[in-house]
Image (cartoon, rainbow, N blue to C red; front, side, top):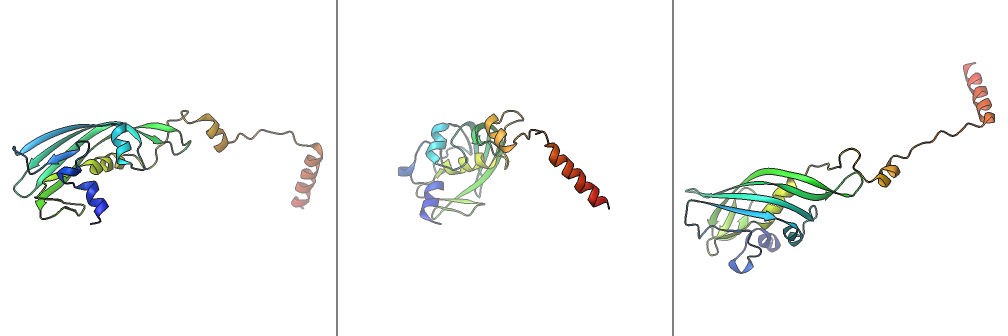
Length: 183
C-alpha cells in the first residue's frame, strides 16, 4: 500500500491528529462507544474534493470478537455542496450507517474489506473513513428544490423566447412556399 494512503487510514501514536482514532490495543472492555461531530474544521483538515462545510454527528460502537473488531457507525447531519444545476452552495442532508472490520497484524494494511492495524501501535485513525462515509451518502445528482436555484443562472440556462411580430413580407413568402409545396 502506498505510504500516503497508509497515513490517511492508519497511524502511529505520533501521527494522531484531531482525535478521530480508536485505540484497539488499549480496549479494556469488549465494546466501547465513541461520538464525534464532524464540523467545518474536520472537512477543511481532510481536504477532500466533495465537501468543504458541514456538521455531521457520528456515533461509533466498537465490539471486540475472537477474530477481529467490528466497527458500526451511524451518522446524521448536513453538508454543504454545490448544486449541479446552478452551482450555488446548498445544504444536503446526510444520514446513514456503515460497518468496518479491523484486526491486529504485523503491519498496517487496508484491503477494502478488512483493515489491519500494526500490533506495535494498535491505533486506528478513522479520519479518512469518516470523510468517505459522509461523501458516499451525497446523491449523485444534488440540486436545489424547484424555485431555489439562482435566478440569473436559471435565466441563462432557460432563456425565454419572446414572440416577435412577423414581418408581413415574410408571411407572404411563407404562404407562397406552402402553396408551392402542396402542388
